[in-house]
Image 1 (spheres, rainbow, N blue to C red):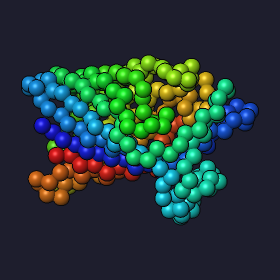
Image 2 (cartoon, helix red, strand yellow):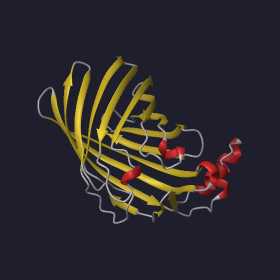
Image 3 (cartoon, rainbow, N blue to C red):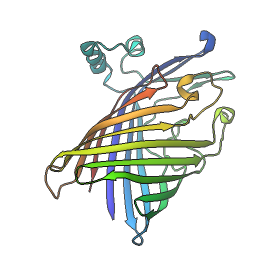
Length: 269
């Protein structure tokens, strides 16, 4: 049995205008995403996996630090400066409704389980995500079963350098009062690499693109595909200790307000 736990903590700020400046989308929060993965080999080629997710949405505490950080580096983030500090806001005015989401706190998200098969330097994983979230507020979990399939392969691997690619597709039925704006099919791809520069210490980076989640809302931040990048360090202090993952995430596209900064802390053993 293999275990891995990774947690990301994001300070997010988005302020988007619809065409004609008639509507304004605001998302200002700090968001927790933690995942405990368990992977067990059934045979040399076949394995099963499960993910227990921990999620959260908060007013947060990092706004003041990030405003200082941006001023120090000379970065301009108008949305962060114009919104109140450490106040949760999620307002999503659509052409036929005005959605206001409350702060969620910490909760168990939607359980994911799957089966995979290895062949050569690649593996294929099929999985299902179940609507098991413990939060009562809408907008934070699914209410239907989603499915996905992912193909991952090695491009380059030696004692120092690793380069992998992956492509995935999924289907989640639309549901609820916002079904007319939801997309049911999704696709994504990524390229990830690491370089071990000294002993067991390494740097890593991942660039991924994903299709949009919504349609016809009038806000580019949710109607357009997204490109993001993360980067950081993989550290192993002692040979038998877990490998630690320390990193940051930044959105590249669509241009404009998006995730301010994301911090990743993980362990694998």
